[in-house]
Length: 639
Image (cartoon, rainbow, N blue to C red; front, side, top):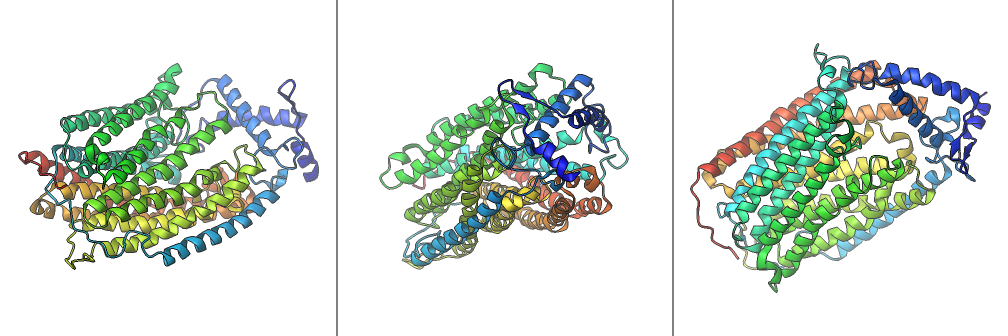
């Protein structure tokens, strides 16, 4: 019976001439029974884990959705013409129907390990051979060039950005906690039938979108702050431009969040794609909001170029100024692929551009811009020479983008791509771990830089940004753990085949997104706040920064240790034992042990929110209050 079942399902009965897919009698009966199953599914919030009651009321829509599910099920099991594996490279794993790991996935996983070892050896050899690589060079005459309190009006205007950053961060963690609660107790929210008012998919959407929005806004504010610091003087009207951009970004943020809610509640009807919820994870916001966001990015780029000013023509600082502008320009222009598809574009095509944004835009070019900002920051603080700062930018571009551009394809193993994609993506994705190992060296360099002396004159270099450095040290740790260890763990085809979409994915996502990009964002907040405050003002909020540092790191570590990693391993084992369908369904998710693992996350969430996020909100509000009360001062250029 099993062999006959596999024979029926593996046979490809699609007629390309008429574009018709023929069902056997058993498949037709299954399809019709599925209509009833999905009708029941969308009417029960316990089973569907908190969706709206009667979310899909039209029987015709249920039938069309079932047809889509039937098509994807066929594509995942029927052999490609002339091949012995399906269109999805036999994903998902289900030995009953003959879906098992392909030979290619095993082969390229093994060869990618060789790439990893060879790449690691080459880079470590280079760092051992050339001692000037990294943040700390040799025989450098360096002294601070940016001192706390010496800030311009446009730099002080960025503090309100960071207030919004902190507020959005708080909102993101609160809806994240609510999303986690739906996994632990999908039927109610402490006795309240919350699914009638705010369904789980809306909370999940906001949780993801708010993460991108608050982190991006922190980088935008940091770029504005540092551009003037690099330029050395305040362009006329710069503060006004910063304020206009602030209003625009707040409107886009609130408008997109409201639109996503109206889209979920199906209020917008035919306008859902433009102003509501697109339905693509991480690219949920409507197309109109995406266009406005790009316009905001372009205005930001214009302000950054104005802030850098004449430094681009300076014989000494022209190169690093140009690099700063070029990496900033990548942010708006490389976001454009998010609009390379429409509401009816083929799923495989959409996923190409969706993961361009998720992986390459966020993890590649945003990270390159962050590295450039750190290089500029260290240079202006007098911690590294201009040569060292410039060298680090080039090195980061080579290491991160060299492997990251092709390595993006590890998201496409099972989405309808060929085995060639699996081969190249596996090899270069493994190489992405190499630069992440170097971040442990960066963390140690940050420690040395914060306690350094001038190599030439021997004077102590006083750097009043201790907590900025601590958050950057945390980035080095979480980048290695979250992106390096957990990322590499799930990127090998032989592991990804069983793991993708399990809790091990958010385990990597939380530890990498928050641990790296989130900690970077907070470090820029802390730096900017410290830079605009006098010593006595800073002493009144430093305790909140200290508490936040430990609260965020301890809370994130407990999330991983008590919930995400063990729950992910448990689900991974269920995939191996019972098939992917079982581990992703209520058969596993409603088990007592799986529910217990979700409840174990509560202490971590409470520590993260109360001891980590709330103090940052208080610190940013107090800093904004100090800046508002202070009378304007004349800015003295430190060029």
